[in-house]
Length: 273
Image 1 (cartoon, rainbow, N blue to C red):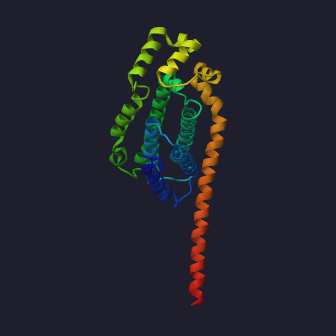
Image 2 (image 1 turned 135 degrees about the horizontal axis):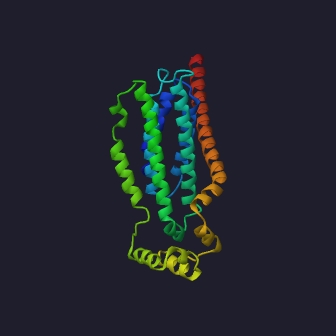
């Protein structure tokens, strides 16, 4: 298991435990997507702290679901319908964030790509942090309106999380060596556009930050808009997410079958006595 991800599984288990007592399709959907994303992140060898910190934001958002029960979910009630809309939007945001993570870890793993697109990734990750915070606030508002919880109970720790998230996101792209400082100065003095379209300069820059040769595919990535790359990557990411969610379901079913078999063997053994 990747370092730092254990608390997120614990949050997920608490939410699932609460959800056993009622069926609300949108909360079930959000839980399944979160499971899939968490497994994908858990399976990675090297986790980005900027991406992992957003799992804190998602976990904080999901923890609100532990307060949901039939007293909050009234059939055909406008608040219940609005709750479904918020959870559906949350699910879409989670999938978009998963797409960004997949792109960052896989197609944009070359040092030169991460170096040149650090600012773009930083802005996107910061935007996702804001969107998760907004979804959480909307969920909390419904609970407060229903008078099921005191506002202080679910707003606890929010400011600390926000400050910590901003601090960690700000570290993305910060120079970690003297060579990276020189590389930043080179881009600043020559201009980003000129560097991007000058193969020799890109090669020099890549060498400065510990990267290798700049291939045609890498140069195409560098010249592409991040939003375009995310759109092109989405279908492939969805296949990965679906596979991840299916693997979790198969694992749960196997565990359940094994437990039932042991229980059955125990029962048969007792009957024979």
